Amino acid sequence: MALNLTVKLHPVVLFQIIDSYERRNPDAQRVIGTLLGTSDKNGVEVTNCFCVPHNESEEEVAVELDFAKDMYDLHRKVNPQESIVGWWATGTGVTSHSALIHEYYSRESSNPVHITVDTTLQDTRMGIKAYVSVPMGITGKTMGCMFAPVSVEIACYDPETVGLNACQKTKTSVKRQAGIASDLTQIVEASQQMENMLDTILTYVDDVMSGSKTADNTFGRSLLDMVHSVPKMTPDEFEEMLNSNRKSKGIQR
Amino acid sequence: MANRNRRANAPDVDNTIDLVQVDGLVVAKIIKHCHEEGSSAVDVAQGVLLGLVADTRLEVTNCFPFPKNLDENFDEEDYQMEMMRHLRKVNVDHLHVGWYQSTQQGAFLSTQFLESQFTYQTSIEESVVLIYDPLKTKRGFLHLKAYRLTPQAVALYKDNDFGADAIKTHHLSFESLYQEIRLVIHNSHLVNALLCELSEMVPSYEGSQYLDLGTASVLEKHLRSLTDNVDELLQDTNKFNIYQRQVVKQQQEKQKYVQKRNLENTARQARGEAPLPDEDITKVFKPIPVPPRLEPMVLSAQIAAHCQQVSLFCSQALGKLFLSEALQQPQPSQQTVLKGSSKTA
Image (tube, rainbow over all chains, first blue to last red; front, side, top):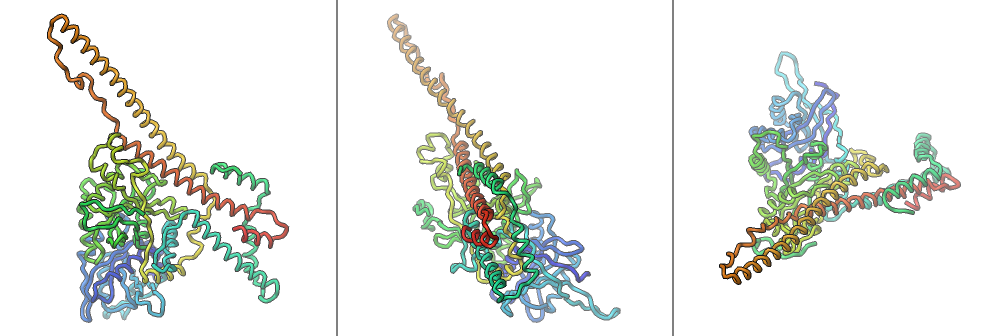
């Protein structure tokens, strides 16, 4: 079991995990569920997940395996490429119950990964961690297993990034709502962002010129790259390109 | 938005829905499903929306996709029931509040679409349909809109008569077939915390493809669908004109026939013979069937939607062109170039 695995998580998985946690039964401390996705030798890509009801107490843990099976079949009907790649749980750390659940999942898939999402926001961060099970112990005697951490990345399809950016606006709104901006509004916002970024760069350049900050060569080189990335065209060429594009959009200067 | 009073047979809901609130989870799931279905031109990705109604707000809290019916034995009802049963076990809202569909270039209007929405709206008063455009979202502009049929359209479908007269009595035109409802994305506090985490994990320059200047191919596709629709509309209009001419001709012939009969009858009476029996005119001149007006109306609505899309697209493309023009203005020094562009932007 390679430990240099990277687990690529799609944002929809995290959204689903949090939603399941918010809808948990009142007596449940944590929720668990199945992860779906694809895996290859370099890593695992997790594209979907669903919650599985379970009961957990000090002594025992009971997971509804039939439910898990049925849900997996239903999901397979929509996307046959997705297979079980592991399981998720909310909370921090790995308990002895997790080992049992992990064993069940290793029957369903080879080398399952285990993802934990810290919804209690310990250390003011929502820790998203992934583990694989590594057998340890003295050969010949009872083997135990250790949950070894592996690195987590967020992978997005292009449209997912766009959706994510649209959702980001709910952080700043009072009612936690964000309307979907029209096309032109988005361009306006982007140009305002660019203006802010340019202002920051200009203050930095001014500071360096006046001597209050030391010049950094790598910074200078990237700034030069940026200025050179503006395409070089003669004013006539540019005017022509601009006018032809305007004409195709039906407006004459 | 619309503050129409509800019809008398829906006493439990007083207000029309004027806001659709969609959870971030639903947006993410719809995007994932439509992306994975691929962009085949024929099939659309569809799914069911789950949620609840709160005052004048329709909250969509979860959704699940419909598989494409590749298998003959596949039972849609079964799948839906099973899925909803399982989701209910994990405390997901189980009220069916509508459906979603992906679309190509914003061309979603068809008689089939309207019929499906009608079936939904008759069983669940507040149901809406979410239309998602995957290609436009890929270009960087999230396109997710909520629609429902207007009450007049619902009444028209109930009568199931799409002749020109029925449409006039219902005061229906292509603009009043469906209405758009305002849509907002809503996230809980915990999801906002997740978004803070994600904004650190996903680099900020991702998702800036909406600043791309290339526009010709998109404009071409839009215009192509537009011309197709206009062609179809033209054919339908021709058919209707022919029908109208035929009706006028038939009227004239009927009149002539009646006149001839009367002449003959008077002639016969003069000769003392019995008058010809009164024949039912409608048997001699069969009534010409009225061509249904629904299809042309739907086409006009689709054309209007296309035009709106094109104008929105052009406005943002022009904005970007002006931005790039600012960068090209020749200035004496490099610094002034930067200051100049930051001022005009």
